[in-house]
Image (cartoon, rainbow, N blue to C red; front, top):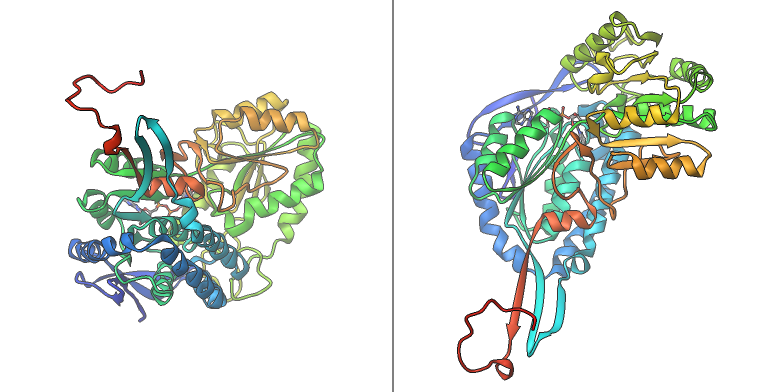
Length: 498
Ligand code: NAD
C-alpha cells in the first residue's frame, strides 16, 4: 500500500506516530493509499525545522525569495498533467477541473513573485524637525494553514505562497482525504530552491489541528473549511493570542431577473451548481428567479441540461461531473434529498439511485434539481455540498435580495440581468463578500482578495491579493531623529504636533 508521508525538514516521512488512515478513490470506493497521521512529536519536529530555517529565509532579500516562486511556478506547469491526475484520483473531480484547481493556486504563486513590490513599506520625510518616520512589514515567523478537501492544490497555494514570499516558514495541514498533491507541491517548492524547513506538511485531523492552535511557536493560522470548524479554529487560535483568519461554508444564491438571458443563465447554473459535483464553496446552490414566468422558464431550461449531464469517473475524458468525496458525504447528501421530498419541495430532476456500471461502489450522486423550495426547508438551510440545486421562487427583486441577505452565509452571490440599475443596486446593497454580475462563480483573481461575510468568514483580512501580504506580516513603525534635530534636556510631555 502506498504511504503518503508528512514532509518535514525537506524529506517525506511516515513520522513517529506510525498511525495511518485510508485514502479512497471516490470513483471506485477502493482504498488506494494510506496517509500518515501526525503525533504531537511529528508536529513539534515540523515546527522545530521551520524555526531553524525561518530567520535566514527572512533575511534573504525579497528578490531572491521571489525567484524561488518563478521557479516554483515553472515546475508546477512542468508537472501540471501529473498533478491534475493525482488530484482527480483522490478528489474525484474531472481532470480539467483539477487543472483549474491547480491553476487558480498557481496564479497566487505568480502574484507573490512580486513580493519585493508588495512588501515595500511607507516613509514620511520630515515628520518633525529632523524626524523621519517609516513603517515596514516583517514576517510573523511561523504560519500554519489548515485546508479543506475540495481544493487540495488551490487553497494550500493561496496560503503558503504569500506566507513564504513574505519571509515566514509555513506548516501546512491539508485535508486528510486528498493529501497527495499538497506533498507534491512541497517537494516541488524544494526543487525550486526553497530551503528545507520553510515549507513543512503534516497530516491528520482534529488532534493535529489542536496541536497547531495550541503551539506557542506558531504565530498565525489561516483556515478554510466548514463553518463549525472555522468558528472553533477562530475562537481557539484567537484565545491563544494568534493572528487568525478562518473561512467557512456557504450557501450561494443566484438571482435571475425577468430580463435575464435565460439560456445563458441556465448554462451558468449548470457549471456553478454541478461543477465539481457542487463541492465548491463558491458553487451556486440556490437559484432565485424573480417572477413565476422567469421561474418556469429557468426550470424548463435546466431540466434537459441536467438530464444530459455526463456523470462519471475522472479517468473518462467525457465525464463532466465526478463522484463526491466520501461514502459518508454521499449518504448525507442523499439524506438531505429525502428530507427535501418529505418537506414538500418539488423534485424536478431526481439524482437518487444513480449508478454507473463498473463503478457501483463509487460515491456518485446524480445531479438533482428541486423546485418550489422554501427558506424553512432543510435543503435550503443546510450547506448540502453536493450536486443539488434548489430553486426558491420569489415574487419581486426586493424579496430575492432579502432572501439572500437573511441567509446566515455570505460567501458569494450573483445576479443575472440586463438592467444596469438592478445590477448596481444589488452589488451595493447585498451583504455578501463576493458578487457576480452575469458571472455565476465570482472568484476574484489572485491580485484581488477572496473572502466572504457573515458565517462564511471569521477574522480580518482575506485570502490572496494585498490582504494576504498584510495577514502574513506585522507592521513595525520607526520614528528616527538625527543629532542635528535633538534639543538639549529631557521632555516629559507626550509628543504632539505643535
Ligand atoms: P472540514 O471543516 O471538515 O475540514 C477542514 C479542515 O479542518 C481539514 O483540514 C480537516 O482535517 C480539519 N478538521 C476537520 N474536523 C476538525 C475538527 N473537529 N477540529 C479541527 N479540525 C478539523 O471541511 P471539508 O469538508 O474538508 O471542506 C468543505 C467545507 O469547506 C465546506 O463547508 C466548504 O464550503 C468549505 N470551504 C470554504 C471555502 C471558503 O473560502 N470560504 C473554500 C473551500 C471550502
